[in-house]
Image (cartoon, rainbow, N blue to C red; front, top):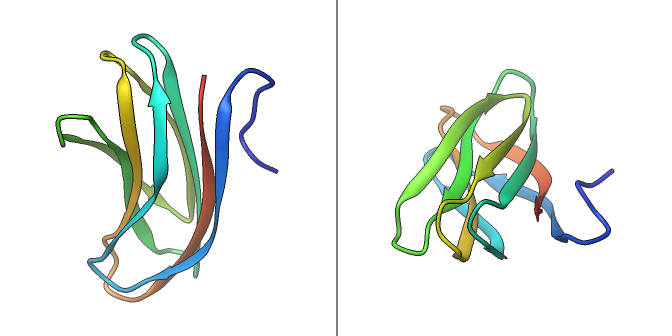
Length: 103
């Protein structure tokens, strides 16, 4: 299942393989001030860690960490386009998939 809402812009990213230390940009979403961007990640194999979050319009990174899977809502303080990213912080390759939505 995907994160979705009838009035929200949402997207799902297909399974990606990330080498250790690499970052994947899943897409860009527009959000207004006081909206949220929710991101969901599923990570394989079990026990691996990624950080995931948003890059703000002024190139600041807001992120959290997840082991195996995670969902997080980022509250937006300034309207604009936000890039969705995932970075592999594990020592080995990871496969990941997930989605994101603004609401």
